[in-house]
Amino acid sequence: MDEMDEGENSDDGNASRLTEVGRALYGRDWQSPLAADLDVTPRLVRMWIHGDRRIPDRVMSALPDLLSEAVERRRAEAERMEQMARMMRPG
Image 1 (spheres, helix red, strand yellow):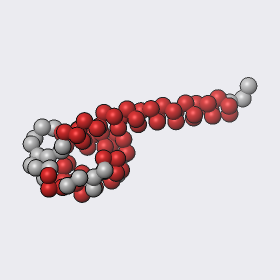
Image 2 (cartoon, one colour):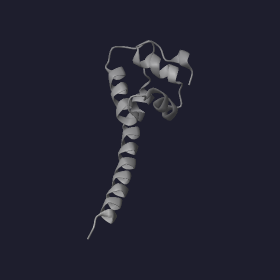
Image 3 (spheres, helix red, strand yellow):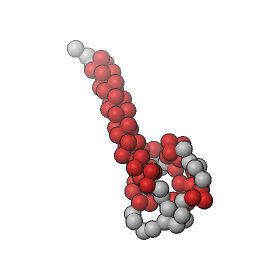
């Protein structure tokens, strides 16, 4: 993605939403993993959250899918952990 095509950011709350989603998905150090998932540079993610560039609609549209995929992965992980716990309980 070309960093120069992003334009100026408007104050529409997208940077806050992007930050919230990034932290929910990846924890404290979320910018680089989110950048990788979006196929952009971590620098561009930082520019978005600081308001130096407008966050493209395609990025905001991708966030629900990233969240849903994470939910499915975590559900599967939780089920595996629950199975392990059941197997380890006596009786």
